[in-house]
Amino acid sequence: MRAIYPGSFDPFTNGHLDIVERALKVLDSVVIAVLNNSSKKSLLNLEQKIELIHEVLQKYGNRVEVESFSGLLVDFCQKKNTYVVIRGLRAVSDFDYEHAIFLMNRKMYPEFETLFFMSSSENSFISSTIIKEVASLGGKVIDQVPDAVNRKLLEIYPGK
Ligand code: PNS
Image (cartoon, rainbow, N blue to C red; front, side):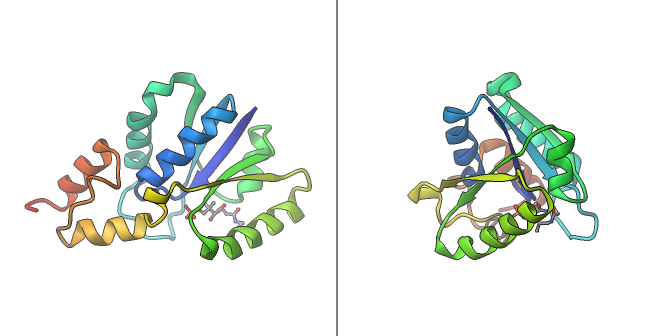
């Protein structure tokens, strides 16, 4: 089975990596769908996000594809002939939001399903927002992001 893993990935963290790697244990392949949303301010542009995710996941070869999407996730799913989406759940606080978007997506696309993977305890506090804040203020995030992402963050926030 193939599933879509959608997200902003600004940037891709070890939390995202953990979800992809665990999903690949039960699925044949994963399409990482990077949201292309010009109205949302992001640190990395779409090309940078895609390049980094490719670099981090290249060892999985054709079991992982990286694409961008804009507009509705359900439209992208239909375009890819897939009705299964993967999302990670870090804590109970993620549940309400995920539940609401699942129900809305299901209204628009009745076959739609979401597979939830629970974050490992060492990743359960990681969010892209926290990573960006710490990196921008000179803190180390080497244990929370893949090497390629850490190098890019050091390029953006040098002199740390
Ligand atoms: O990594 P994120 O920011 O939590 O990912 C959120 C994402 C990209 C999955 C969600 O915002 C999304 O699906 N956006 C596309 C627009 C859409 O379909 N919206 C309806 C459901 S909220």
